[in-house]
Image (cartoon, rainbow, N blue to C red; front, side):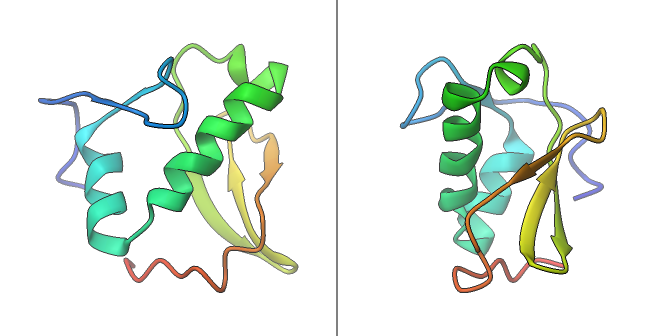
Length: 91
């Protein structure tokens, strides 16, 4: 992922047209079959006002003791559905 340091292309999220994402997110979605992750981020933006308030978001997917979770830049955890069965083979 270190090769993605900006965006040459922007993509519209199919689930929430108010959300744009970058080449790096598109790479993860295509390479790891992780379009579900883009959907989860779109849902978090639709349902959580504190998430939606972040104009620019950087998401880090981390595994925790109960499954998988995602962290916002400020360190606020967002609980995702148990994505361990969905997989994301990128390391």
